[in-house]
Length: 314
Ligand code: 8YV
Image (tube, rainbow, N blue to C red; front, side, top):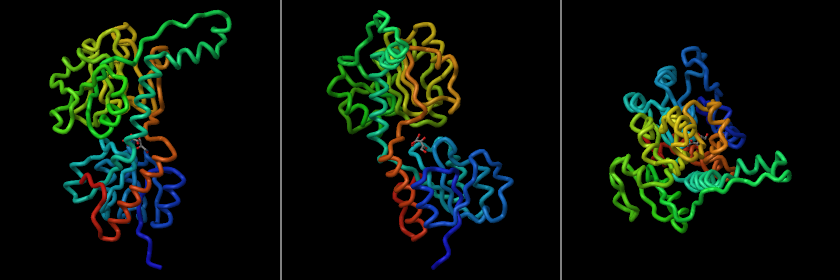
C-alpha cells in the first residue's frame, strides 16, 4: 500500500467526510482557532488543507504549511480565504458550487414565508397558550403578488427567483453588472433597486466588494412594508443599521440565516418578534452536505491523481 498523503483538516467536519478523508489521507485535525505558528512538525508536512466557510484559510495557515499544494473548501463561499495569498504562493483552491443551490434557495423561500406570515411569532404565542386564552393573532403581510428583489443573481439567486416566479408580482435584481442570460429586470442603482422591491433577498457572494452593501439608505429605500432575507453572508448587511431599521419600524421584518459575527447573534435581534433567525442552515441537509463532501473529495482525488480540478477557484 502506498503511503497516504498528509493533510490538515479544520474540524471535525462531519462523520462521513471525516471517515472518507481518513481512508485516503493521514489526517491532522486542527482546531479552527489554533495558532498556525504553533503547529507541530508532522502537521507542517501537509500537502492539502480541508476547511469550511466560516474558517476559510488565512495567509498564516498557508505560510505555516510549506508543502501545501491545495485547499479543498467545504463551502461555496470563499470570503474567508486569502485568495490573493494562495494565488501568489501557487496554492490551488476549490469550493463546492451548484450542489447546494436548491437547499439554500429552499431555505431562503422558507425564511421569506416564515417572516412575512409571522409563522414563528405565531408558533410562540400558540405554545405559550395565548391563542387558547383568546388572544387573536395580528394579521400578516403576504408573499403573493409582491415584487421580489434579488440582490446577487448568481447560481443561488437564480434558484431562488425560479421558486418565486409563480407567486411574485415581479422579480427584479441588482448585480454589479447586468446578467446577459436572464429576462428578470435589472436595476443598476442599489437605492432604486431597494425602492422598487417589496422584499430584498440577499444572495450575493460575501467579501470586501459586498461588505455592508445593504446599509441604512438601502433599508430606508425598501421602506416600512419591506422585508429582508439573507442567506448569503452577514457581512453584506450593516447589522447595526438593520437592527435600528427594524426597531424603528423603518422596515417590517427580516429572515436571517447568516450574521456578521457567527455564532454570535445580537440580543436585539433575538428579542424581536418580526425577525426569523436560523443558525446558518442553508446547505445543512443530509443530502447536500454529502454532495458537498463528495465534491471536496473528488477535487482532492483529482489533485493527487494529477488530474484537473473539478471546481477550481484558484
Ligand atoms: C457553510 C456556506 O457555511 O457554502 C457556503 O458558502 O456558507 C455553507 O455551506 C459551510 O461552510 C459548511 O460547512
